[in-house]
Image (cartoon, rainbow, N blue to C red; front, side):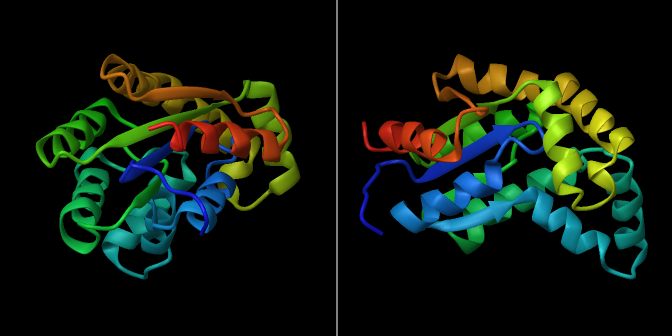
Length: 191
């Protein structure tokens, strides 16, 4: 860890396959902090042989985002209980407008500086990358289409909320990985 930043929360948002996980790892390796991913939480819960796990698996495999109440609970728990004084790198958090409002309100109330990186990629790139990765059912054509629909219906509105507070940096996610990382690091070390 050689770099310093004043941001205590760093959010990576973007469409499926835009590189959020890759960039989160680079940030942690260079700035420190703890990774928090709603996607990882959803996959963990989906693997459980419980009524909630079965429901989450059904929802996840349909390409739906986590319900507001669950995503907000996980997010608030990470911010207020487990990692209160630690830098958090959020991968795909606050993807619905209500969650974005809560996220901003918590940060404003606790005087915790945050930044949101929107890794922007066109749908054609999402489809190509999903075909190449084929991680699970979400990378199927039907799964990708539903994820893109959810992004356009909800996450674009979350980005508008973060943008209205001056916290969004748009980055071309089609650039080589190293270039995306360089742009992110430039913004993290500005403040």
